[in-house]
Length: 141
Image (cartoon, rainbow, N blue to C red; front, side, top):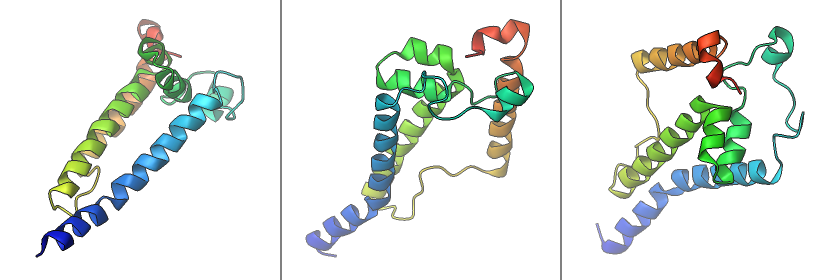
């Protein structure tokens, strides 16, 4: 394979990661410009409205907004799980780009086994439960 075709193949393999980056940046800009701290600016959580308790995702948009403003501590106090998720997704994206650049054209950003998916779901459910208990109140938004 020639140098030109290798270079073209590399850039072609980066289309997916570039699309994800553009989408993520667009969402980040939207959350930075349109502040979710304004009541109802993105709608209301049905779980919170019906059950009067925050779901595992409650505070996630506020956390993302605070991250775009550089307030990591504030973001953690809004939704620790969302902050961890942003970090994991950022690392996964970088690994994906590196793998694609090195020639693994079929590499995907995230691949979870059935067991890993079950552990992730269990962690989200546990987070949702703990943040609604008295000793986990510090996790509530």
